[in-house]
Length: 537
Ligand code: F6P
Image (cartoon, rainbow, N blue to C red; front, side, top):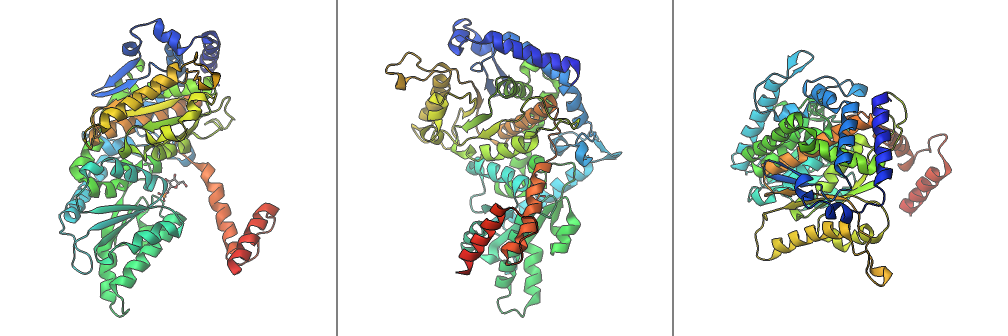
């Protein structure tokens, strides 16, 4: 570790020791302006971090850490298209997908912007044809249902935003997402659908992912068997495949080999990481749901956050402050987990999406230099929508005795304005951060006591529209980059998921009835033998 970086960490450790004994009550009592001095705005988005256990000195020391780690340098290398994903030899340019001007972005000397624009123009044309009912299936009927088949980054982003923006979704076009290898995902979905009016999107960056290919094969079989029930009309089969089977992939040839019509493939480049791919053609099911204009507004919001991240000074820089507060909590104070609680039913899937973004990116313990990290990096992220979460696991936040920071997300105006609901929802959100911060440490008897000092940040979006959602999501993306840089990690690879995939391939023949691979442990062998016996009964 470079000496300034080591010194910055040590200074934070010493500072945390010195702060011991200061409660959040003390910090608020000492400064009536704490909220205004420890909150920031990006346009109409408010970020309040005054309930974090930090002082001005903490923020100076955290800024020193960011500088010693050269967050600004890595940020600019990313925007410039340098191959900062070193282990895969790739640039990291999800930001190019939402760049608003035509300024060239070069990868290996080639400007990638014209291709990005061309794909979006094709998406627009296709979305308009499907949404208006002009696009017809094999029977001549318009499309009424879209099923996205993808997993991980090829599922979570569009699935989450489709749910988040349901209030502006197409009134009659239904969008389904199927991800799991378990037939219990696709089987009931297909049961409820009409093959004449269903469009499938197979979304896979690599087009090798076993879950997606298995679901795609099942969907193709279902579509073709229904299109040509008598088995003597190959023209109908061709038509069904050509008009109702779309692929989104960075590996178009593999999609063609699978049988997808080359004209029905929407591509993206290998410099788009799976968990950063919402902004690419992977967003197609979402664009079908909300329309291309609204999809562009999502990109506008993300682009505004890109600009903010590049230009705002540290104390005003939302993603950087999110990153630094997270590092402070997890790597200095030792929080092994943090909760994300959107007080918005529409954002109920946000924790799932951010789990992949943060945990697949920074859930690592080997640095870019190949050495083990000196301190733990990404905490576990979990969460679900408030107020549901309050009635399930908030008890542990209040009295469980563990340091468990929280990100609260509130929306000032409801996307479903019914009397009474939203005011009560907001009251609950703000009451929870208040209770966590200050507790009731003097309550009697002792079992009623909440000690307080549970840190939290609160985001307030003016409303849940595409622009502000884009702004928020891009903030979490840049937070992830900044944290990866500070921890010395490459946030853009995911080698940890490979081993399990390989082992599953190796075990499959044994589950199907073949011999157990040589050298298998007794637990794995025992589990397989047990399932085989149960299945043979
Ligand atoms: O196994 C993890 C992963 O590679 C994720 O990073 C990715 O988002 C997901 O699988 C799906 O990959 P693909 O889009 O190539 O099917």
